[in-house]
Image (cartoon, helix red, strand yellow):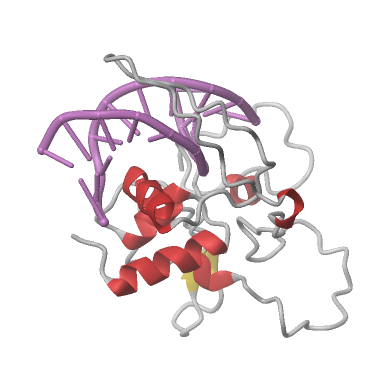
Amino acid sequence: MSWTDERVELLKKLWSEGLSASQIATELGEVTRNAVIGKVHRLGLSGRAKSPTPAPARPRSKTDRPERPEARPNRPATIGNTALAAEPEEMPEEAPAPAPAPKAADNVVPMAQRCTIMNLTESTCRWPLGEPGTESFHFCGGKSNPGTPYCTVHARMAYQPVQDRRRDRRLAFL
DNA sequence: CCCTGATTCGC
DNA sequence: GCGAATCAGG
């Protein structure tokens, strides 16, 4: 497959939302994370929150590469830190915050990695969210831990439901 | 060992 | 332009 306008657009969106390259790759399908990263760089939107590291630009070559004195385009430093939320979704464990105002604005949450049964893979968290059968129903879609169908957060909910089950905690397979 | 992005370079 | 291979980290 190729980089259609729509795919590029989605790439930009997801990347700016802070999703990792591999997540974007699986989201887009038909591409590897390398492809995503490569495209990101070609589009010029790399470095999401980096310090203006001189980037030693290591010369990797068998045939002797002449070092390019070319400098990095100086990132203005601080700006990056876009409070990127890799996995906002909901906050399962304890919700201490009264959450007074809905805050209409920054709800850049779910669209990013929401999963339907369609794009669930071996490594996506299958924790269900919402009312099954309704439009809003979806799966967490985060990175599931190897050997479990859930991401770290939801695995903790799935296994060892309450307190005191300390001994014999093999989190096995389901 | 899992993952992350960064870079190079043959295609 | 594309992306696998590779590198450098966490």
